[in-house]
Amino acid sequence: MNELAVSLTDLAKAFIMLFVVMDPPGNIPILLAITGGMSVEERHRELKSAVIVAGVLLFTFAFLGKAILYVLNIELDSFMVAGGILLLLIALNILQGTYQSSERESGTSAHIVSRSGVGAVPIGTPLLAGPGAITTVMTILQTFSDLTAILAIIAAIIATWIVLSLSEQIYGILGEKGSSVLSKVVAIIVAAIAVQFIVEGLRNLFPVLG
Image (cartoon, rainbow, N blue to C red):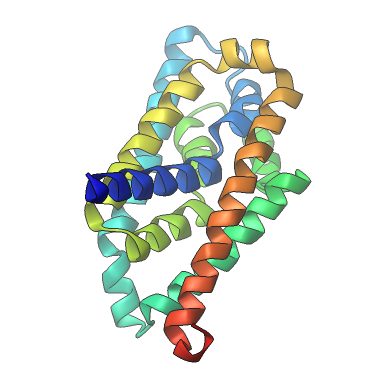
């Protein structure tokens, strides 16, 4: 029972981290802007494309993450500290309302230039599976078990699909401010997890700190 509880706790932490960095609630306004004027079928097709592209990218780095660190001769604890710092910065940017601003501006530009393939770019990447999400996946992989990481990615992708599929309904209920508040509340949790990663990584690198 205790091992199961720890496993579920780790899974919850990993899922929350990745879900917040992918930020589907915060991406609802830009999704509606990019797909505005599309038919229901077209929007669903682009959303499906976005989720597939994001999933492929995240799973690619999940399976190749350890090999990348090995080739670059990077210690796991060093990556944990670096990943924790990046997650902390992302959480702080979400709280300040500046996270993904450049990507969202790019998304708007893409909408103006062409409506073809907007599901893959910019929705799939970099809005959902950008540098922050990729780094988060690799950090999760080094921190938790491989199974936990895989399940967290699957859960985050499914949750993202559900949220974005209901984007019109959610936006109608929460509005832009509500979506922003929801993202910021959960970002506080991610910030706390990030600090824990940094502390644990430093303790492993410098045992005297323990």
